[in-house]
Image (cartoon, rainbow, N blue to C red):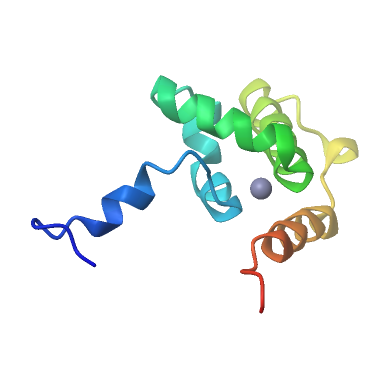
Length: 99
Ligand SMILES: [Zn+2]
């Protein structure tokens, strides 16, 4: 079923849920404060119920703070394996349910 102007997908864009993939794509806009208020609320809503994304956003936040403050030294290097684990967890939780 299509709407007369063919904007069928817009209905989904306004769904009050966010996919984990969206969180990954928009984490920088969120942390930089470049997201509009509505999106921020939806984003935060998702973080409340999604631990992998919560961990991912916290991780990115730390990373950005480190880069910004340039207090980055060899001891505070983040292991690539941790990043990998988080991204994997997000991918898994983002898989469509199989029937
Ligand atoms: Zn998520």
